[in-house]
Structure formats: structure tokens, C-alpha cells
Image (cartoon, rainbow, N blue to C red; front, side):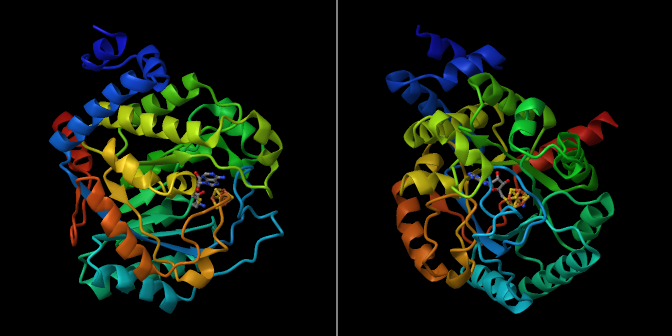
Length: 366
Ligand code: SAH
Ligand code: SF4
């Protein structure tokens, strides 16, 4: 039996097993993908959930070294959608029977911002009669803010750990208290405690990142008992400090393949979570997200931000579909998801089964 087969037959993977799987190529890699495809079909079904993604503002108070909308980047035009524009995009998602929406922006921590989000959450609940699932991805916030948003209708929160290794985290962020690894980790713990369906993720193919780091990222997600993951390839942006290291990166196609392997392994080790096919995959391969669906992802986030603003929410280079309107996106996606053999679960919230299983386990332990 090949080493890959032997590993795939085990119930749990060691770090060394994961490092080995991350480096499989050719037939061995295909075996990994077959296994993750089977596990996905068995545990979460051949379904894809849609989340309408509203990137409502690129104003950010932070300076992450990799991100194109970091505060210090003067070459980006800043925008902030009005409440009506946001709610129109949400309504579009609801009317097109997307089960959920995601509100994402740069990180702002002010009482005004907190109140604005609370107001929006209430309105979203109203306009969909509570039917739409709501995910927010608004960075690190104090516990009382997380609580206020949860109590006003946010079901899920996405906060990527970006890199679970402290040292690597500090290499890709400024070393100051607003970019502190411990705070990020604490925020994730708080989200879980408050009751959110909690999501995290990492970038794949970062400068200074090793296979061991990536294996540790997957182990971090497992040990943290995370409900949802969105992870994608790191893509350099010329207006950021990390651009200096672009010659040290692996080719984009390799970052892409490595992301597919990360998704496949994660699906095998965390069978009942939701895994998003990150938009950054599509920046490398036009059918990148569909390829991710085939190897284990089960969530796609079609961009429903009004077209005129999309160009300015450039976290990385070559962001796809920045010149399209939401309706164009829907048509093109439907055809492409159809090609994966999975079905789009229209009108379903698509909560991760893991969330309920985790809470039931916690109750049993009390
Ligand atoms: N401000 C919030 C949410 C918006 S950023 C936050 O930081 O949590 C959303 C995600 O974009 C980040 O978590 C990061 O993982 C990703 N991102 C930023 N720059 C990127 C790049 N150059 N390549 C790939 N992903 C990037
Ligand atoms: Fe701001 Fe998020 Fe970009 Fe960091 S990753 S600079 S917090 S938008």
C-alpha cells in the first residue's frame, strides 16, 4: 500500500502525516482529493451554500503587511456604502434566494461604527423576516461589541487567524498592540464563548511560511473546534510591505494547488464544518472556486457589492469580477457550480452541523 493510502486510512493524522499529504503530487494527490470528496458527500452532502458578500467599506485602521487596503496605502480610493446601498445588496441576495449574507469591511472600532452595524443587523432581520443567515467579518472588537451584534441578529463571525504560528504572525504584521497575536486569538475565543458560529482561516503561500506552519494551522483549527473556515492563497499586492519578498514566493499555481490540498485535508479531519471556497482562488484560476468545491469546500460567497465600488476593495492583485454587477455573477456562478456535480442549496441558511454537534458535546460535558 502506498504511504498516502496508509495515511488516509488512519482515523487521525499526526503533524508529520499532514506535512506529507501537503506535498503529494500526481496520483497520490488525486487519492487525497478522492477521499475528501467522499467524506464531503457523506457528511455534508453534495451541496453548495451561497452567501452574498457585501464589502461595504475599505476604510481600515490597521496596517497588516499583506493587505492592499491597509491604512497607510495612499493609492487606494476609500469608500463607504450608505446603509441603503448595503440593504439593497442584502435584498438582492434574499430575493435571489441566497441563504445568507456576509458583511465585511476594514477594521474600525468606534461607538459610531458599532451602532451602525447594530442598526443594519436589525434591518436585515426585518427585511428577511429572520430568514437570512448573517455573517459578519469586521475584525477584532471588544467583547461587549461582539455581544451586542450577536444579540441583534449576527449568527456567524469570520476572523481569520491569518497564521497560527506566533512568529510568522508577527512577521506579517507590524509589531504593536493593535496587531497582537494574543488579542486576535482572544477575540476568536470570545466569539466562540458569546455563541457565534465561529470561523477562521489562514493565507497559504505567505513569505516565510513552511509546510510545518500549514500543518500547524490545520491542527489549530481542529483543536480550536472551529465551525467554519475560509482560507485562500496569499496574493501579493504592490502597495504593501510584503511585496518586497515577492521573489521568495512559490509560483501562484503552486499556491493554488497547496490551497486545494489544505481544503481536502481539513475536510477529512473536520468532517461537519463549513469550508468556503475563497475568492482569492479565482484570482489565480478562473474556475478556482469550483475546483475547491470538488475537493471539499461547500460555501461560495458571490460578491453582491455594487459594481462601482468593487474595484476599490482590493486586498490583493487581480481580484476577479471587480467590474461586474451582482446579477452577472449569479448567472456565471450557477453554470459553473453545476459543472462540479453539486447542487446550490437555494434558500437554505446552511448552518454548519459542527456548530450544533459542538454545543451538544459541550452540554453533555457540563
Ligand atoms: N478587516 C477584516 C476583514 C477584511 S480582510 C479582517 O482583517 O479580519 C479579509 C481577509 O482578506 C483577511 O482576513 C486576509 O486573510 C485576506 N487578505 C488580505 N490581504 C490578502 C492578500 N494579499 N492575499 C490574500 N488574502 C488577503
Ligand atoms: Fe485592515 Fe483586514 Fe486588511 Fe488588516 S486584513 S489591513 S484589518 S482590512
